[in-house]
Length: 158
Image 1 (cartoon, rainbow, N blue to C red):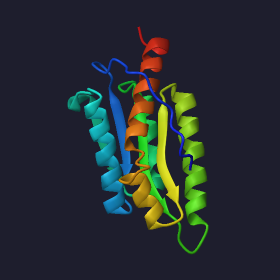
Image 2: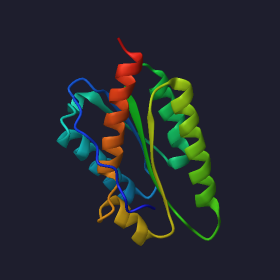
Image 3: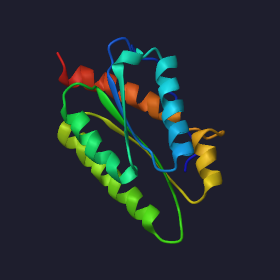
Image 4: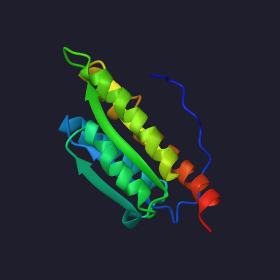
């Protein structure tokens, strides 16, 4: 995963509505990722009532709910979150690839930005680094959603 990050310009968050779909598998990591992302949204000024958080069993189930939320017309962006840690098989790679493709398709067909925040890592140390460590991605996912939501509002909403 890249160490380089884009610096986002501030955006007006007063009316942005965000849907956040979080997997519950690997609960300690998943809960922390949802928490850091929600904290980042709040620090950017997103009103708590404008963020709807829905939890699903695992990362494979995230696209189903993300699709419903993206197609609802209620949200300006959707953030999809999960933590998939490698095991003894290639299952983690399959989950990462299928969810990435599904989330991309949802974003395109719904015309609502969907931020892929499903972390696919090789071990728990990598997961911890990306959830609460120096490479914490919650802020990045929140920033991306806010910027894409602003673009979406400018393009599609009158």
